[in-house]
Length: 231
Image (tube, rainbow, N blue to C red):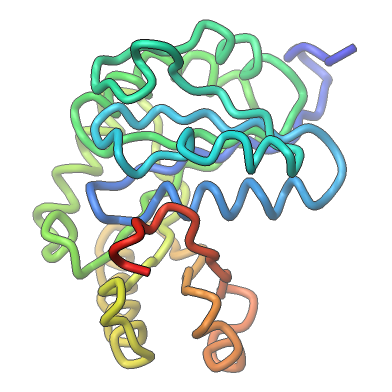
């Protein structure tokens, strides 16, 4: 039987990933969920990105559930819809002792979703709210744009970001120099906000070359959602 949230129970982790279009947050959330699933315990991934219905974790539902991840996502007529439709079961999972990850849109709809769920998030003593930044995407190219997103999400939900995930890439044009320069830009943004950069995420092909430089901060990404025309 799953344990419910109550005083005295030490819960497993809750990680929330927010970011604008093109930040790569869904790939990040998928990879982090799969990493957790490789260990023991229950892993739950909630796909709450209603803004961009074409690059979402529910596209690979069958594959990831075979690897031990419980995916919560809209179904039926809402499967590829952009109308907010929060599955009722998400509240129950938020109140249980599990490793849970939320993939959240980085706009007004994402802020509303986080605001709606914030009371349940606050019940869990161990949670992280990550801002995923790709400094090569329009919404994250300057400090002002990132601040607008940060304020929108934090004020609506009354929750604070606990970390930034640096995900610098230009898709197929990415190289080592692109990663290094982009990561330095993310570090400067993080310093301005007083929020630590917890991870630098890179495609598998760059991991071995960059590991000696970044060590524990570096996370390897396998791309699950890249469309066929970018393969």
